[in-house]
Length: 66
Image (cartoon, rainbow, N blue to C red):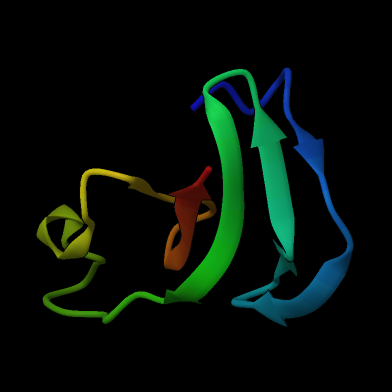
């Protein structure tokens, strides 16, 4: 996802010092906050993401919609 050209929706919370946005509109599509990823072995394994999901920032999962 190209975050530089993205528009962020309203903040709905914080996680590990980073804001959680309700939505992200990126050139690649529209994403909505889905969940906080599971932490394991000093990180967030990417294999817990579906093909239509992204993690931004680390630990915060957004699902592409539409």
